[in-house]
Image (tube, rainbow, N blue to C red; front, side, top):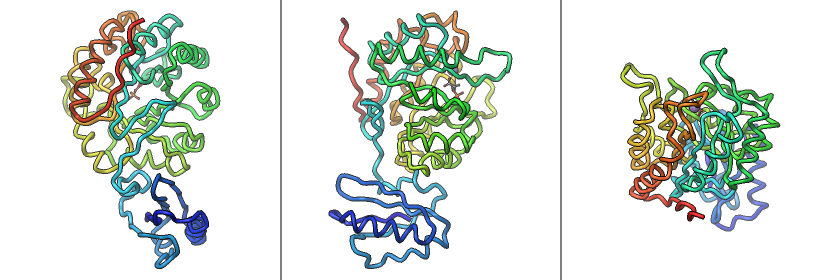
Length: 345
Ligand code: PEP
Ligand code: MN
């Protein structure tokens, strides 16, 4: 259930409600808004039923949340979208994030060139994998810690926050040194211990929807992170498996407006992994932005033909500025504010 405190409820009143919630063995998640404080009381139904708050000082309203995902639910924020602040880059509500970079960190030149190009075109965050989930165990698995060092250099040169994937909780510490956002790959969406570790780290997270996962399963994955007190989670639609064989995955754009009816968390779209083909990335990105996505995460490479991983789907750095312009226009149509490209130097 969600407990809405009165505007002006005192700290002592809030603490008393938290004590009441914890007293029956449920967990209390306090979220202090500008006007009111909300307290999520999460436990099984029996525990929640024992929390008696009628007439409790400072309590305005008690709202039951019937969905299996509680902290992720739209009701938990009284219908208001969450805005995440990722080292100054906002995402959610009216704020659109353009996250771009190579699939994989390969070399220093490739990394720094990509980062400079996406920054100049107005990207708000830089992506790149140091640890790569590959279908074949014989494929290149990423540069690991060396890749993280290159990401750090890209961050220092551009000032862009870095999004990078964590596959194994044993790599959490080095990843935390550079990642402003920890990406959870589609294949790890249901790796619950990994999600809980990321939750405990407190670092913003981006969860990719699993290849065959329902939206409810995606929200339950987010719940694992939120439950640890980490409120900075964004969701990413990246294509699901269907019967269609004419393209790699089916980009489920209906997920964008539907998720927005289910959750307050920002919803972004990855057209690159859905399509697997560069020529589809533009139209899918426009459709996603126009559908109200809170951002796009897209792959870019200075020399896609030479890329070790995912070259066929990567946009070329020299075509990225024109692409970014179009995406910006589509996002603006949907009522988003998109930061403009940096003026050329
Ligand atoms: C990626 O973003 O590079 C990636 C591997 O994505 P996904 O987990 O969606 O396949
Ligand atoms: Mn990739």
